[in-house]
Length: 166
Image (cartoon, rainbow, N blue to C red):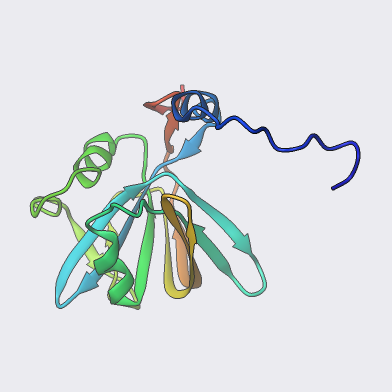
């Protein structure tokens, strides 16, 4: 270890403090969607980022306790739906467990069959590339197969709350 880098602390980091500090990093909000056995599945996820342009890769990080993620994994393809400012209700609906997430949600299938939700700011359709265990989450990498952006304002997550640009 370089001499100018502090040694790891022997005391654990407090999870509440870590959430509070990291909450100061503003992020967009997404719904990761897929179709398995003819049925749409999805989850809200703010841990999403670009990985590589060549090859085109993105990543998201679902919780290991997610009840929706195993179905998304088994589908083999997924769509990152970047939520627009007025899609708070979708964010909350897909953040819950239950069979009614898709009730009243308008969507169309993309090239992989994954749901592209109407009214989103952007969407990125992917095929699974890799998955890594990462503490209490997975790091899931997808190879981009299609994508599109729209002229909409983003839904943002900051300090534990949803916000729009003002």
